[in-house]
View 1 (cartoon, one colour):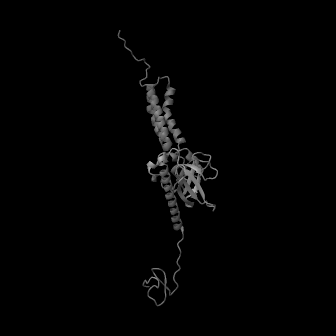
View 2 (cartoon, one colour):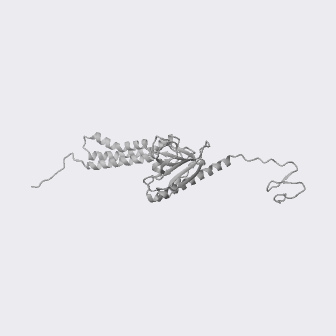
View 3 (cartoon, rainbow, N blue to C red):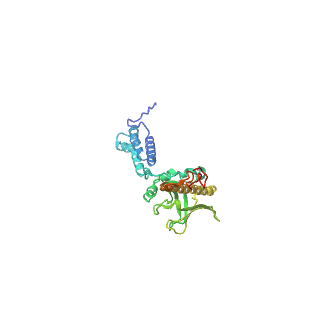
Amino acid sequence: MLMIQTAPPDAAAIPWWVLYVLVLGATWLLFRLARSKGARVVPLGCLAFVPLWIVALLALPDGLWLLTLALAVLPLLGALVGSRWGGVAAPPLAGAPHAPRVIARIPKELMAGQPRAESVLRSRIMRARFVAGLPADTEFVARMRYVSGIGKMTPRPVDLLMGGGRLWMAPLTRDVDPFPIPARDVLRVDVWPELEGPPTLRVSWSPPAGELTAEVVLGAMANVPPHLVAAQIEAVAGVLTAAIGEEAREAEREELAAMAPIAVPPPAPGVRACRNCGETVPPGRNACPRCATPA
């Protein structure tokens, strides 16, 4: 007997799993974009509503109109949530000086096991750091394992940041605020060999109050490949030393530019001054006694 199998009248034109793959993919993509780009992605969520709503109508029965509407709105909600909870904590202040991107000076092959600078600066913890006083021009250097040297802070992972003319040690938790070290007060950044284990990074400075020199000891993170530990610590030390020196030179140039020029009093009547060195030329002489320049 010939059997002709026909589809029921309410059969869906598109398989249901296609709809859910599209909805989940669009929601996740818009959420990630909104976290990095901000509220500019929300219009994309509005544009995604129409095609997803059409696909939902083709994949779901007519009676499930509430589910159809909810699935079409999910990407828009993902964009809104991402823009609200994103890691873009604070825009740079208008006219604020921007520090050089010191992380770009370290070769990528030496930064294995380190987080990307963009992901750190857009992370949620940066909001708390900015509230605690971190400057808006902050740049990420590296993530290190803090050992000792800052008050009662216990050993933990910290981010090394440069901003506002200071070196900042920022823990990954909110129980301790970022700790600043004025760049101009840093005495040295050294790589110290250890008797057992990899070398450590030591930052020594003199507090502004004139106390004894303080020191912070740091080490490599556990996820850094063992054969790169020493090279990575040396590269971070070189970056910090160069950035600190540049900050100090820039501050000195600003101080020199702000100094009032020294006013040279005019020579007394009848007294001639050398146009080359300013030495007084005695009466009756036609040349400077210092540089022999004709008067």
